[in-house]
Amino acid sequence: FDTVQGVTTTAVQPDGKILVAQSGIARRTVTQTITQATVTRLNPNGTLDASFGVNGTAALPVAAGSTGQVVALQPDGKIVVGAHAWA
Figure 1 (cartoon, rainbow, N blue to C red):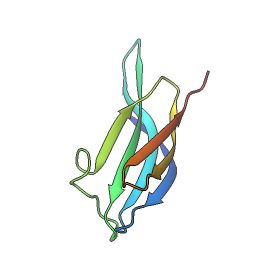
Figure 2: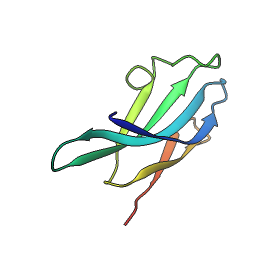
Figure 3: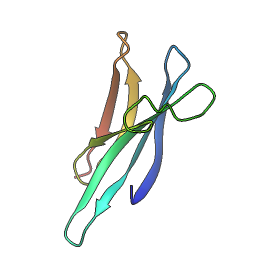
Figure 4: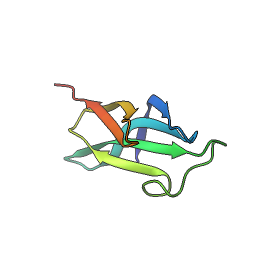
């Protein structure tokens, strides 16, 4: 990330691992800004869970100006991330 705009929400999995949704700018060029929502997973002791995504963080491409707004867990354990797009 060039810029992390901040944590927007968190969720705790049944095993105590913590999901943290964030939004930020992944890359800027002269003509383009690539925006991503990310989810980072922490172990119960607060360290990064390196088995999740890339070194603990999964990046999700979203529309320019969008932010990751919510992270939730389905009953089957799947992670759901919602984003808000600014018009």
